[in-house]
Amino acid sequence: MNSALGIEETARHLISEETPLQTVMEESQRLTARHFSSQQNNSHTETNGKHWRMQLYAPIYVSSFCVNQCLYCGFRAPHSIQRKHLSVEETVGESQYLLQRGFKSQLIVAGESPKVSSAYLAEIMRRLRSMQVVPSIEVAPASVEQYAEIVAGGCRGITLFQETFDRTLYAKYHPAGPKSDYEWRVRALERAAEAGMPRIGYGVLLGLAEPRRELIAMMEHAAKLTAKYPDRIFAFSLPRIHEGPNGFAIPYQVSDELFVRMYCALRIIFPKAELVLSTRETPELRNQLASLCITQISAESSTEPGGYAINASQNSCAAKQSDDNFHGQFLVADCRSAQEIADWLTQYGHDVRW
Ligand code: SAM
Ligand code: SF4
Image (cartoon, rainbow, N blue to C red):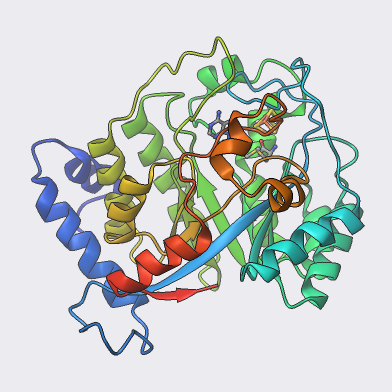
């Protein structure tokens, strides 16, 4: 990043249509290769500065119970979906299924409910760590003490999307429940860092507010935390609203080009940050971004508690999702198997880590 310019000015330049996309993409690719390349690239692919290590991960949805009413989410409280909460034992079962598929990096995801206590999460962390899993969490915000308990259990990272940094819109999208407390949420990553969380994952839910302002607000927030906690790994995701609940119209559409620019801007301004991409996006776009800046990518994801046990018997993501009995958070857009994705990444030249 040109240090003479502030974050806002640099980011605005990078995401402006007047800045050639090709230039932004090339700079992003160069920086990713520089900071994430490994010695272990495949010998049959020549190293041309476009390859790096790529971490695969998979989410485990442990609970679809939720006391909040986020307007954009299929798990919101008023929805009469069939809800499910996994016991620690059932979670271990899902984890073992993913381990057999090769995934060591597993993300525990849950709605907000008293069932998802810090003691429950800490116990899951302990069980998964004992199986050599590298577990992380994406759950409701917690206190420093609660985060410390979860970290002591073996948690390696947190993902917590602010959704939007626009306070007025935040209040509109989160009309009730504990999540309506903007201040509690916007300070959660700092509390996690204070509790010793090794990896801190940011995100805004694209579609809720003007995307350029959102990106800049997130970057400015993160810049302060990276300065305060230089020993931590920082990560960013840019989830786009995908298949919101019936009746939820996406107020701010984000084009593919802007989406790519935003990820590239994150890479250029935070060259060492992990950039994370989920299965909310299509295979084509995921392949493109994986060749520009992404360093962590999910695969074969189920957004339904107990979804892997069900998948194991039905074994088709597309068929599974068209089933009337689908009770997940949202439908995934990339149904390729983890092996197919890994093969594509390896062929491209990346050093795929499970
Ligand atoms: N309940 C916790 C929370 O809200 O922070 C964590 C789990 S929640 C399922 C994880 C994230 O899913 C939310 O932070 C939100 O950004 C995202 N999400 C919700 N509805 C979505 C949708 N329709 N499309 C894409 N992402 C969505
Ligand atoms: Fe609950 Fe999280 Fe969905 Fe909001 S986004 S309804 S808190 S699961």
